[in-house]
Amino acid sequence: MSKFIEAAYFSAKKHRDQKRKGNDASPYINHPLEVANLLANVGKVEDYDVLIGAILHDTVEDTETTKEEITELFGATVCGYVLEVTDDKSLPKAERKQLQIEHAPHLSNGAKLIKLCDKISNIRDVMENPPDFWDDERRLQYVEWGRKVVAGLRGVNENLEKHFDELTEKAIQEINKKV
Ligand code: ZN
Image 1: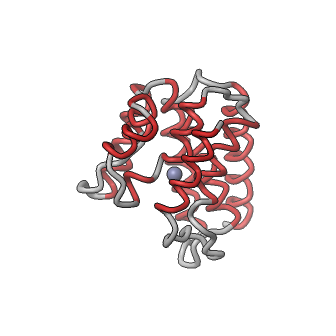
Image 2: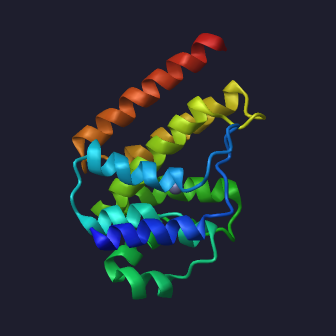
């Protein structure tokens, strides 16, 4: 538990100057906290390495955090999860999105759980607080891409998969009603 608190504090400091993309510009740390909360309270996940990996999952991709720092403070298992869900930002965005679909089935179970909750959090955000310049078509494409990634993550947690399915079905209905 104390390691989880340490990770939450570490992540909050690393993300301190960042905001989410949505129109409410909420503090970035809300997102990793939501991912960890989904794992613990919807998925009933109790593995601290997974929960700590969740709270840290965007630090290497979006801040100056190194894998050495994470290994030293939180261990190699946690660092492995974080790296598994970290995109290679030197690649063009379309390629990164395609690679997420291709890599999903090959992730460890811990990384699959984190990725599944990451997609739930991001899609919920895009539905509730889309960036101002996102139209319905772009939101629909985002939800559909999320579904393709999650297709490769299935079989790890029934509650979370059900939560994802309900969320995306509702999202698609809502967007289609307006289009
Ligand atoms: Zn994320």
